[in-house]
Length: 111
Image 1: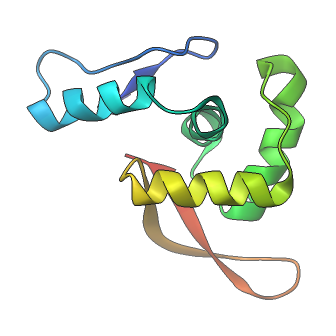
Image 2 (image 1 turned 120 degrees about the horizontal axis):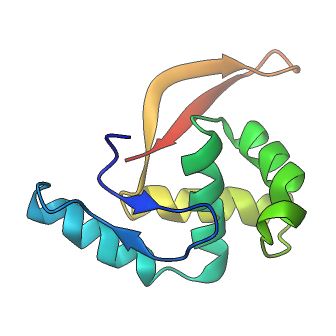
């Protein structure tokens, strides 16, 4: 993967490759300081993304037991994704997905 932040499926520690710029190392350090619920949402999005919020919630629910993720409401997952966006760890891909309702939704990915 070319992601600056490396995270294993079950590990909570993030790393940047030595060849990456200092900003990648700063981002990796910030991930290790994230609260558990934010880190769980970031992990799901990193492993299964890019996803829109509804897809993120669905994937979180699907993987909750296997990945031993903390229990969160749908709104909590949305809020954690928003916080991760504010932190610069999740970004808008520039693509939109069409939901079953016909509405368009932003598709998110990790940096």
